[in-house]
Image 1 (cartoon, rainbow, N blue to C red):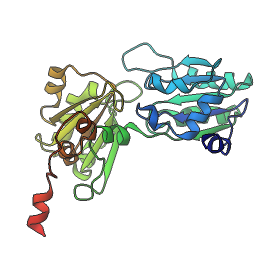
Image 2: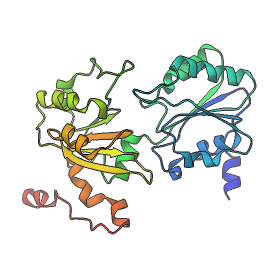
Image 3: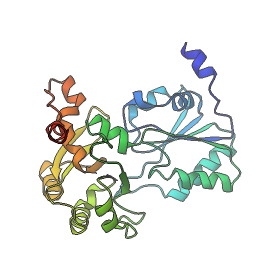
Length: 279
């Protein structure tokens, strides 16, 4: 059955590059196209956020090249990574550029694809499950819930220079987005929390940090906007993490399905009483 499914999918051709997302961690969240590419690629250029278990699908004899980027640590320059993809493809290799999450969601996939266009290299985009959705789901926190939010904002906690982006309109986001999901935000969480509180968000608003999402090492810290910086320091948690602000965090005691597998008793819907009162 599976051979028929894979045979119907496009092939990773020599001299081309596939920019693929590996999802937030669990190899079960890889797409069929990503698995096929792992089994066909001559060279896999992968990020630090790609779970090693995802690389077990690599065919024997394929070369693995690490191109991870971690804040505050020595890492390859983005332009060098992009040009390396061009070099590998021009040598006739079937090249897989594998990124954690989705390549087009804070993953620099657009920059790399534009470099391939610049040099005439054929490519395919293979979307992945972004951590801002899949990572939260593995923590039992929905990005949306129709009785809580009709919009959600995804933002990055630092720009290319490593500081909080000055182009983010914190006042508009604080006022207009019931749920805020943040990537790469832990390092500057004190400043970010202060920005949101200054924009009108309550210091008591629920907040959660999901570290190493969708892996066996996943940990979740539930806190509030006002306590976030001190609680992160006290807990000793470290990136990679996805951060969420909003009332959806209150659903975790009811929806922590991974915790339930380990024996946690899930609680009733915290918003059910309010629905009954307004019915």
